[in-house]
Length: 306
Image (cartoon, rainbow, N blue to C red; front, top):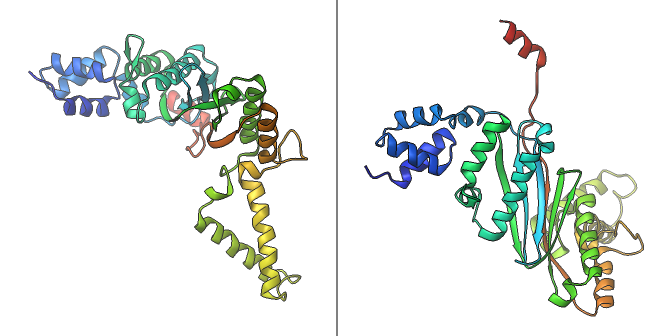
């Protein structure tokens, strides 16, 4: 019996097992979904389905750059407990994933699961890891940049940054540029800018900030009675302050407060005899925006006694 890709995908959704395992099970079961699920359970693979509903907000974020293939990756893989981040198999899996993304360039997480990792798919390798570690593990997100990049991981996987630069191969190969690029990545991890430069700030965001500034002035007795022209000048100053706080290139350089990141970039470019531009970056914080697992040990013990 011919097994369609649609059937394989449907079984994968139901069991969270690898695509190849799902295809094998459906083939052996002659397309019978119930029997295929039983086969997967018998093989210990469908146990991943039971874990799929558990909250996974721990794990790690990771960033890496391949100078040879000129591609960089930042990725987040989540698990249920923070102990997993120290598990060698888990860490090795995440690092391998970054390499797979660099070389195979999948479009999204779904496509990544179908990519090859050694002699199996990423999806199969993931389910195998779930069986060993006995926790829900999810590949949450990733970003891949081509060109000259810098990767930085902080706190053993709590923060990860990938920065993309526009410069010549000659400049990028110099140790001074590599040190500069790492400084910029560390700046992003520490100061967490929202945008690369002023031009990236959406007009609606800026207008909203100005509305808030005007409201603050109206509620402040010291500024409420000032003429509109004066208020507009004050707003201009506040907008510049907003840029300095939220735009990477306008931020005060954390290693030298006498210059901003834009000035530091210009300084290094001049010293190296070339041009350097910070094009874009991605900063991942582990578990950012995810619901955190709340353990109620008293209830857990009580339920075990019952």
